[in-house]
Length: 212
Length: 212
DNA sequence: ACGCTCATGTTAACAGCATAAACATTCTGA
DNA sequence: TCAGAATGTTTATGCTGTTAACATGAGCGT
Image 1 (spheres, protein in one colour):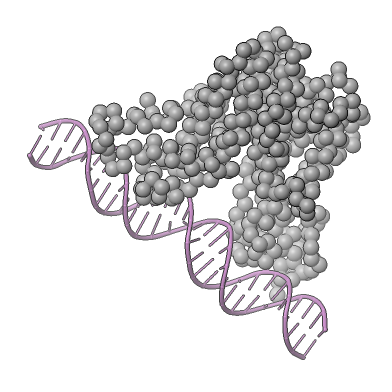
Image 2 (cartoon, helix red, strand yellow):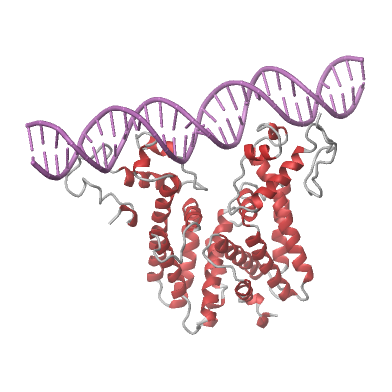
């Protein structure tokens, strides 16, 4: 029921559901802050959001955001969740479009790298923030849940002629590979070349034809 | 008059580049700053160095460091270089200790992950800083040079029964794999299990027995 | 329609940060 | 010995996140 769960969300505010345009003072500052924050971070290399600058852009005083987020970290968490959802959508789309399992894995991997390259600061934000979340908690946060979903998606892509430990290793291998490749590109160590990315992802045992 | 001569520590710092390392007021503030900075960053998860805090620890005024580094970034660069050298030593040691080529690759990969886990903030610092360096420059910085060395070491580990593009792909695969695995562990997504790390590294084609 | 209350936004203030300018001290070379 | 370079300090500026006190206005009960 909260705003946090959905992709760029302007509903669920006290007034939008009931009436037309009238609202409190601003309208829906929380959603506006997330939208503006995303836009701001999207074209950065490293996520670096200033509360004052963001508030200025929203036409609101510097401290107004504290009515909607307890502190800066909480705002960044909300942004990371939004980013994570977008990444998840991108991954799911790639998975659905693929014809067979092997191709599916390669496509999803390539998509992961591509999305990371196109949204460098969002990827960094995600992993920055998710590091401070307990994924094994009984009551996982929304972000923790979204992330576990992503992990499950990766494991599901592993061929089923493997089993047990083999499967675990393969999934970890796949995730590490694409994540590392993405990070190296983001950090400027490797030039982004889509063909090369595909070849590298295909060079896994489970990504090559001989294992299908 | 509290200049205690050269009793001011700073042993083996491989840095101390530049000057005549005499003892002015402090002794050798540059080397001391690097040593203290390293110690400070070493037991952090994310590198987050404050000039004022560092200066306080060194018993020196907040702005004294500006006599030795033009700004904070320059100090961080010096620390990243130091970290990079340590990583290089760790890698070279692992490479030398291995018996054959295939084992060498696995050992070096495992060592990369191990070192990263043991020095999380230093790894982050390295990749943060190296991203802002032009590796293709005609006059590469010390850091750029150290990093290129690391890259060369990785490629050299690839089996020679490959050639051309195959070799490039394999090297990129290997580097991405260990880097990604290290990052996922650092970000708390994957639990650090040395055995599992070794198995994952071995699960590359060039790390498994059938390719040797 | 009145007034109470709470959600929301504003202003002022504090501590911390990186950094710059002006000043003081101390080392070094001619 | 003495000038100037090297080093460190003081003071000040403008940024940051954050808190506390105050102001406004929407919605609800009467």
